[in-house]
Amino acid sequence: MLKRAISLMLMFLALHVLSACSSESTKEGNAAVVDKTGLSDEEKNAKAHAVPASGELQGGALEGAANPLSRTVVYFDYDSSEVHAEDRPVIEAHAAKLAANHNLIVTLEGHCDERGSREYNLALGERRAQAVKKQMMLLGVAADQIRTVSYGEERPADPGHDEAAYSKNRRVEIVYAK
Image: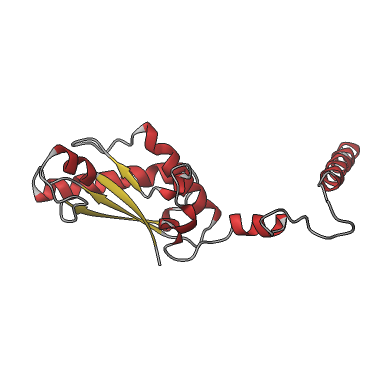
C-alpha cells in the first residue's frame, strides 16, 4: 500500500515538472512572454479571470454577439417558463462566471407581457426567474448568490400592444449587484 502511494506521488510530481517545463518563452530567464497587445500571458490571464466592476457584465468589454456574457436577457414563449435551448449558453456563461466568483450576486428579474391578470403575471414572472435560477444552481452557482424578483407586466421592455412587443416583454433579465 505504501509502495503504491509513493509511486502515485512520484508520478504526480513528474507530471507537474513536465507541465511546468512545457511552457514557451521567447525571452531568456524568467521574463514573461509579451505579444502584440503589450500584455504578458500572466496579465491576460489575470484580466480574463478578474472580478468585474459593477455594471461591467452588462456591456463594455463583453459586448459582441459571440460572447454569451454580452446577453443578459433570456426570452420565453407565451404563458411559459420553459427555457429555450438557444438561451442555455447564456445561462451557462453567467453561471460559470458566478461559480468562479463567489462574491458576485445576481438578481433574476422575471417579466411578462400585458396579457393575463396582474396576479397571474407576477406568478409567471416568478416561475420564469426560478427556472433560470434552477439551471444556474445545477451548474454550480450557490443559492445565496442568486436573488429572484417578479415584476409581472409592470416594467415592459416595449410598450407596444402587438406580438413583437409582447415577445420582448416575456423575459428574465440577469442583473449583477452593484
